[in-house]
Image (cartoon, rainbow, N blue to C red):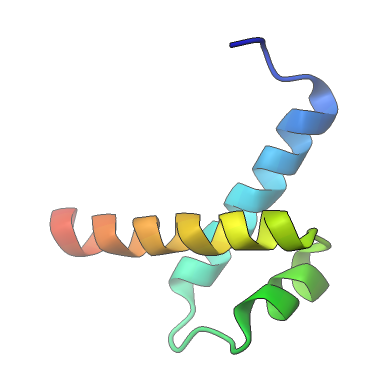
Length: 65
């Protein structure tokens, strides 16, 4: 795997930041994708990635406390 270039890394950080924010929301905003796009300036794909990552974060919190 090639190293991330600065723009790719920046986008990954944005997705991760959005995922952490979403994982903390109770209840999460509905619909999720438009909320993430508006709040974090993500593309549709990035918002979907963030939503999936947030679900993993929530699951890990339940499992590991």
